[in-house]
Structure formats: structure tokens, C-alpha cells
Length: 491
Image (cartoon, rainbow, N blue to C red; front, side, top):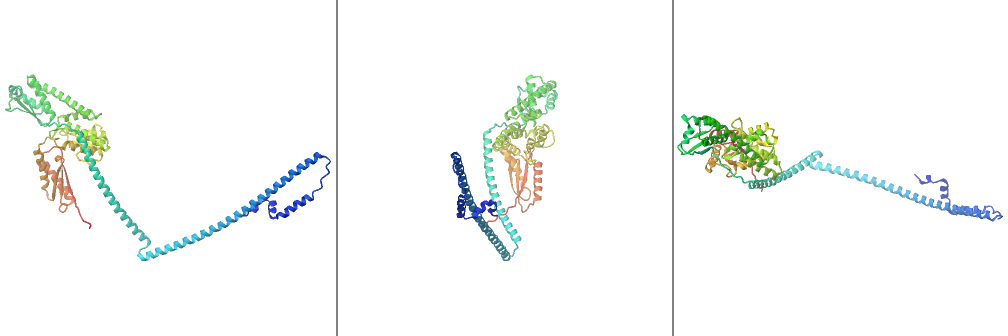
């Protein structure tokens, strides 16, 4: 589009006239101007001269504006011509670029065709083969990286675990009280033995029927032995006999009165012991029935280790370990304190103490995390929370560390040897390891002689043999491991 179409006609005509003609027309216009009238009135002629001068100045200004407009028009026309020239150059370059791209694409297709002919593979096949090779290489590198990370994580975890356990055990130095199943009571004189026995043995029979303990009176001077596997009954029997001996009057009626008073006193002692344990471990909001059952464990022992003291120690250990690894301290502390609560009634109901404890926790509205930790602390079910694993570790530390249990060295070694000997009887067994003070044994079998199905049978037979031939508290976990290893050396 040309800019001339937007210029007024008079400016367009003027731009086409030469400059000399315009000056001649101005001269002619001045010559043809009529002669001025005689100056009759000086004031009128002065006004006319002023108007003519103003008109002349305006005409000159208009001429200058026309000249400037003509120059701008010429400059615009020049720019338009330059823009058209550049547009033509751009179009030429675009055409050449398109032609070059087409030539490159044609050359690439020709090279691909030649590569297909040389390799004997089509394009999709070559692409698939390349992708497969890249995936295999990436998988190999990823596998190496994952293995390295796992090894580093395992080493770091073992180092941290050792540190956490060492710190926990160092910060907790609990004293251990070894207890037995008998209590020796000293009498003021030998005559008291006859009073305890009574006429035809009625007093001692009454006492044994009321308390549920065995009262042993032998030739040992001024000594009576009270025997019972139930710590509560043994304590009630002791207090009953002490009251009767202090009073001096021993007959069936006084035996019943002393028994009732002793039972009430033992109940108060159990509640006080449970409240002291709760205060020591900073556990609150426990159901009153659980408090009473916890107090019963004050008179329960396991390998001469007081169970209530064991629970308090486990609670402290679990809290320390949970704080170290960032787990829930409250859940770990509470679950560790209650993990053996089933032992208070395990002799009265069916099931292991872990199962019974989980049922008690469920009955008295403990949260799921605590119930799960109680039920899983002997691996009867798979532990699913960090707190459950912490309770297992705290239980193992408190029960298996040297000096915690009252077994003699000879008994301890004999029990472990018996466990290993029972497991070694079975065909295909290579090695046996007794762990956690005899709570667990791990059996390594020969993979060439024992298949996967036979491992389950071996574990069942070992468990049955241990139950039949040995006496032990709690449970023993049997783990049969069949591992097939293949080793090669890259040279």
C-alpha cells in the first residue's frame, strides 16, 4: 500500500511541481496585485499593512509546513521501500531454509535406510534393542547402588543400635533381687511346732487348706518352711503364720481370722507396689483392675527375677530407646510396663501370657499400639510397629543380660547344651545356636539334603521334643534356616 493515497490532493500536486515554478507564481501574484489606494487616512493604511504582514507571515509558515511534510513523505517512502526489500530477503531466506531442512531430512532418511540395511534390523527393532540395552544397564547400575546403600545403612544401623543399647543399659543400673519358691520362718521355741501342727494335725491342715501352701515341719530346730510356686499364696501363708505365732493361740478359728487379716494386708501391699511402679515409670490412667493385676506380679518371679521389677526396668529401657530413635516414648513406656501383665492370671486361663495380656489390655480399653506390642513381644505375631520392636529389645535386655536371672552358671550351660543337643539329633542339621538365654534357637540345615518343605517339619519336631523333654518358663522360639549360597570369583 502506497502512502500517497493518504496525502491530500493539494499537497500531492504540490509535491510534483518543481520549486522554481512555485516561486514564479508567487512573483506573478504579487505583480498582479492591484495598486494600493492613495493614503487618504493614515490610520487605515497602517492597519492594512499590519494585516498584510500577518498574512504574509502565515503564508510563509504554511509554505514551511508544506516543505516539512514533503520531506517526511519522502522519508516514509524510503523506509517503505527498505521494508519491502527486507521482507523479500526474509522470504528468500525462509525458502532456502525450508529447502535445506528438506534436504537434511532426506539425507537422514537415507542414512537410516542404509543403517537398517547394514544392521539387518528395522527401525522399531533397533529402537527396541537399544531401549532394552539401556534398561539393562540402568537396572545393573541401580542394583549396585541399592546394594551399596543397603550395606551402608546396615552398618550405620548396627553402629547406632549398639550405641543406643549401650547408653540405655549404662543409664539404668537396677539392683536385682533373687527370690526362691520357699520361705524359712524361725520359731521362738520348739513347742511352737506342736501348736502349729495341732491335735491330730488339724491346725496345719486348716492352714494349708486356707493358704494353699505347703507347710514343712522337719527336724530342723526352731524352723518352719513355707513352700509354694504362687508368690501371693506364699506371702499370705507367711503373714498368717507370723500372726498366729505372735498371738500364741493357734486353733482353726484363729487360723481363719489370721488368714483374712493377712489376705487384706497382702492386697494392700500389692496395690501399693503397683502404684509405686506406676509412679516410678510415670504411667497414668491405668484401669484399676490392671493396677491390681500389676500388683500381683510383686510376688511373681521368673528365674528368680521379680516380674514387677523386670517390668519397671523394661519400661525405663523402652523409654530411653524410644527417645533415642524418635519413636513414641509414652507408648513404649506403657507397653513395656504391661507386656507381662498376662503372667498375673496365666495359670488361671488358657493361652500364653502374651495372648492373655493382649486380651486383658483389650478388655480394659488400652490403645491398639499397646495391645499389639504386648501380643508381639515374644514374636507370636509379627511386630508391625517400632514400639513393639522396642518392647522386644527391652524385654531381652532386662531378662538376658548377665546377673538378671538367678540361674547358676551350671544350670544355664546345661539348658543351652540340652537345647542344642535336641536340635542336633535331626538329619540335615549343620549348626545350632542358642540365643537370648535359651529363649530362641536357630538351626542351620544343609540345603543339599533338606528342602523347603522339610524345614517346617524339622522345626515342628524340635519344638515337640523340647516340650516333651525339658522344663522351662515362658516360650522357646525355634527358627530353621535353609540358605543356598553360590560364590564365583571374577578374574
